[in-house]
Length: 424
Image (cartoon, rainbow, N blue to C red):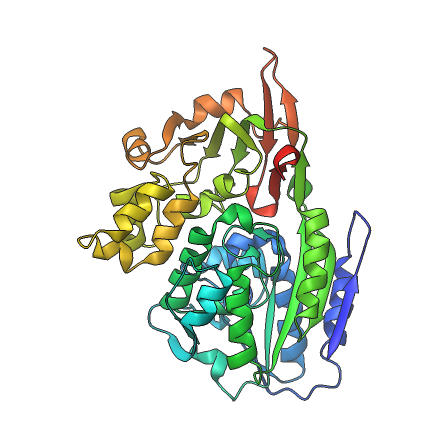
């Protein structure tokens, strides 16, 4: 099966157009039991919530049993409130939490020789391919994987097989894929296809999941003013749907600035960003646009912690965002077994640092200045910063303040990638 729908208008596809495309993707199928693997609330603007809702009701009306396994990765489970807001009237008991440490099985291994080849000799270990047991449950007639293709700091362009191998994957794949990306260099990968991490996932698909009935439902979206515009919907069971979606996302989700940004202000919606683990998208997605010696101000009213779980939170507090070289040095020390056992956290610490090239200031309400500064960031009072850089009145892009200060404002860093044209 290979079918995709594309809308080239700025407004994007209407809800009815999306619904009709989804229903067409079910035509000719005899289905008794289906597993849907949508992204979690951190991908609210993917429109995967609406897509999941349409599929759920269409399948249930046919008498089909439907389970929903959100692709949490290492994130917290979807709360009842989040489920209602993102997925609508689907019963909350239909959502199955994924535990990346306990709910997985090993289905294969990506060999060390392959990793050495694709990383130009920078990585030498094999990677275990682990995935939630439900994905391998043969009682499912179909597995639907909705999600948004968008620039990503670890893989280059998010979604497709990433939704499976990280979203409902296990610790070895999650940790090592993140570390491979960090060692290879995120700025070599962001916004691109065929990166080393993407090739690891491609290997897993080709060798270990090729016989599973997986249907990818990929979107390319923007969300000006918080309103989701679905510019592309790509449905199919091949890599082709990913490639077409990537081409559109590169057009819609990468913003080039003419010269390096001296002061960038990023707003993190408190309903979506509650940790620096997630909030550091403000660092990842802007780092290629900020000038040397520049400043990044992160307006983060909802951030109350560093890691999404207690173990990772402790690691971030212990080691901090102190730069790539420092993190790798700490990673190599025999006494730091805790960091080596959680490569995903080590990679995150590398990603979240500017390596001293520009300053990062977190403006928060619910975590102390001392805590913020202890992990290597500058700290500021949220109310004070929001009074000067009001996210409700600033326009996306360049703004000139009354006193003449020029800033570049980004209302949601998860929806794009910003690059200095001079250095691309």
